[in-house]
Amino acid sequence: MTDKDANRPLKLAVVGHTNVGKTSLLRTLTRDVGFGEVSHRPSTTRHVEGARLSVDGEALLELYDTPGLEDAIALLDYLERLDRPGERLDGPARLARFLEGSEARQRFEQEAKVMRQLLASDAGLYVIDAREPVLAKYRDELAVLASCGKPLLPVLNFVSSAHHREPDWREALARLGLHALVRFDSVAPPEDGERRLYESLALLLETSRGRLERLIADQQAQREVRRYSAARVIAELLLDCAACRRSVATSSDQVPGAIEDLRKAVRQREQRCVEALLKLYAFRREDASANDLPLMDGRWGDDLFNPETLKLLGVRVGSGIAAGAAAGAGVDLLVGGITLGAAALVGAIAGGALQTARSYGTRLLGKLKGQRELTVDDAVLRLLALRQRQLLIALEARGHAAMDSIKLDAPKDKTWREGKLPDALHKARAHPQWSSLNPHSKLNQTERQEQIQALAETILV
Image 1 (cartoon, rainbow, N blue to C red):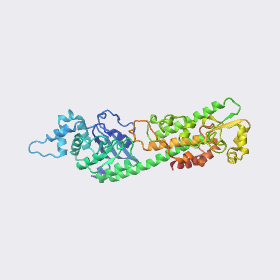
Image 2 (image 1 turned 90 degrees about the horizontal axis):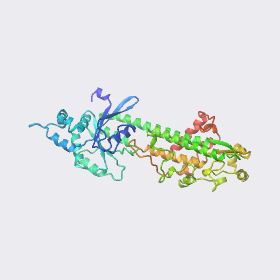
Image 3 (image 1 turned 180 degrees about the vertical axis):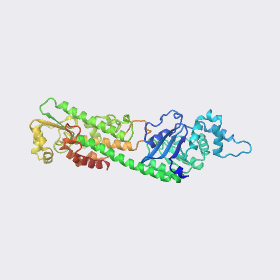
Image 4 (image 1 turned 120 degrees about the vertical axis):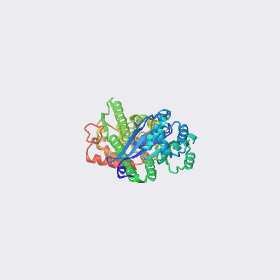
């Protein structure tokens, strides 16, 4: 490689049979859900498209999507007949003759596009649908591609499927002399999938190792920044909801409406959090909604304030004053709309609920004077945290080629279901100005930012 070549981006051609996930792989590697066209129809990609990956403004890698190889068997037969009497052309010379002929513009137009791009690249990623049986056409494809004289790295796609044939493909590739390969499911890529792919390329392209290592380091740094930013987005949601409050006269017939208005505000705030996380991870807005994210066979779609939802997720919903009757002590907005009357409140204070009195003393006095203060219950905060943490886990494991809506597993996090809520949320109860859901909010206060940071670190644990 010349000094001039050392300063140019590494060029990779993504090649393979039709409909094996080449465009899907590129969407995931570039984190671009809009790259190319992903479809289950064969021959979706009809031309070469490119994408560039840069670090600090320097282009390090260029990736080229190519059309699917459709008739490698016939092409291989045709190439073998191109040698003239007495000639024994090598692969690149034979391909050069093919590309100059009329068949490259007619019968084998698609294959010619692939060959030209691979010849112009430093290496190729040969994408394999690992669910497919190893057929003769794939062996012929590899023979045709090998004639380009470029390093090939097989990429086993869709290995997360229960029906993959990875052992068969490993054996077949080894028999063809391709011992280096990488597992990379473009729909559900492993956390270290990109790193492994670039490390495998570095073994084949030693002179490009430095660029690939820079790319690996940059992508790991981006992953960590995204994850912390996501934790802050969730922390802001929880702090907003914990500090949110509404006041309404106890005897007023406006109480039911005030409760519903607060619930609506919380639902909308959660949806904004979902949309912010989707944007941060470069997914489409329609990939998930707070209203219909499926959880536990679709139960995520149940109302955020439904007691049955909390019960099914194992969220602790009662202690102290209202154990067994309502969720949380010292707050008025309770799961299912149950509220504590003034008599029950007086009895609770007389019974020694000192922690409740210390935390909510001023507000309790207001209640006794006829004012009811509506706040978001601890159990709802727990559920919000569980939902968003599960969404974060799903986004980190999701490839940008995924076309289905996000589906989440039931949370197994006992800390948020049963443990003590973080101190930041308890502090937020006494600072209504910290919530964007309240009028006259002051969101830039130093203490608020400190609590968000502390809460974000808790979310990442």
